[in-house]
Image (tube, helix red, strand yellow):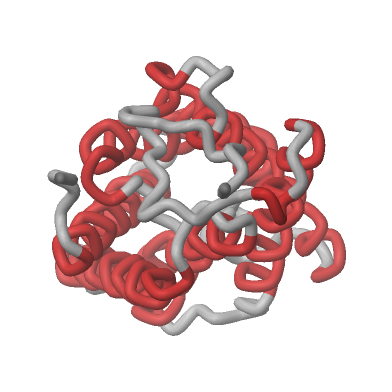
Length: 247
């Protein structure tokens, strides 16, 4: 008998994880805006990487620690996550991100740095390419450590947090390195900064799908051979070989 929490509890874990991501990550951007030089690009990237690593360790065994609508949709696309649960996960992630941004607003009513909202510093086309590529790198790594027993699952959180930090280091100054529609929508909606928000919806969703399918291809099993499990754990705990063909 499975000891996995029911859908409501898993959704709550996703909401808490997304809340923490926005409050800590976007909070770091606010801190840098209010106190220039305290964190810088490297410090902000480190905060985003560390908070993701912590939340994967904290919630991976509960909900799978998707924390990102793009990740949930990519897992659903590649049949690693049941479609019937995807909408609930995405809704929880969005609510958590909105709550995190709302708490930042309560602390910082002046909305410094638009509460960490993502705004590109390049043209829309270039920003879209960046967001898609950054998210593809992330999703490729997630697919490896979360769905393939040949990967070292114990270090999944470190690998995922590392990719987030890496992407933020070189992509942060260009697009904000969102890779996550919830992370962008939360502070964007609360602060009213929705300039070119579509980039942060289309880019990550397309990039995550590309990264997931790419891993399926190099892994050696066609996507049609996968049986959808009840969830996918990003912490590497209790992984099973997702490539096993249903008989």
